[in-house]
Length: 299
Ligand SMILES: Nc1nc2c(ncn2[C@@H]2O[C@H](COP(=O)(O)OP(=O)(O)OP(=O)(O)O)[C@@H](O)[C@H]2O)c(=O)[nH]1
Ligand SMILES: [Mg+2]
Image 1 (cartoon, rainbow, N blue to C red):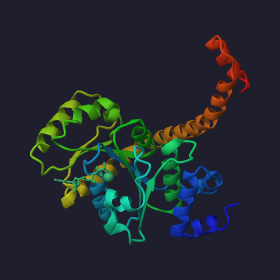
Image 2: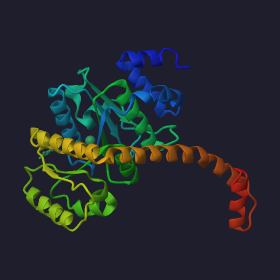
Image 3: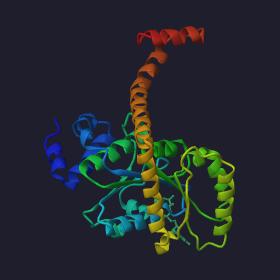
Image 4: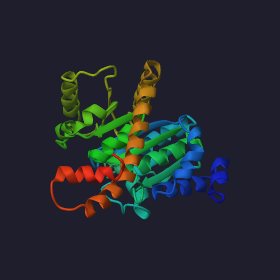
């Protein structure tokens, strides 16, 4: 089925991992995922999200360095659903990981949805599964923005870090957009900025007004360009991981992520068939027409 891809993947060949991800991205990864998903579930997955320019990539870069010093191998997935063309030459620049490109313990990939049934979140989930099954210890997923697909991608990760920056006035916007609900850890980056303490105060006030069932997200100030706060950030991620494991929340969370993927795949497969049926249905009562469409699927 997969020519030489699967054996090479299992041997730990990095190019095989890259090819496997490409195959999944283009919607041809079903058999591959089937063959390797039993080996996944060991990696720690961390999502890093937040508005453009807050320093997510700089943070990922220093986090990768921190993890490498601990001897951990790391996969990085950079997702930018808003610009499917930000590949190739732009990638190194955009994700600021150039110093890690030659490190065999670091695997870096940018994502697009292309032909994937589950959209960009589905392609990202497959890439994370592949990196995990391939044997990377930590998978970091960077997503730009605060839209629905970012929130979806956050659902895939065990721990979601929401990064904000001072002086942007977007803290309230971000929190309105449902980001407060998905954050397991808050980062206030650019703490060298004069407004940094004010943003921290704003966030703490908002958090005091919120009921957190179980886990209260810690707030970690960082200065990513200087590598400051990165150890505290990883400690916060580890603390969240310990919470997930000791309370049984991890199993629930992963079940949620699993259902999310299954739903996306099933609906993704169904959507074009519904579209085709709708196009051929005669004008008239929309309810009766909807029933007629469903009847074609035995519903
Ligand atoms: N002053 C200051 N600047 C920083 C800090 N961290 C990152 N920057 C700068 O902020 C800019 C954006 O950094 P990126 O890491 O590319 O931000 P990003 O969130 O990944 O950006 P997108 O991927 O485009 O959304 C760069 O010019 C960084 O050098 C920091 O702690 N302090
Ligand atoms: Mg970035």
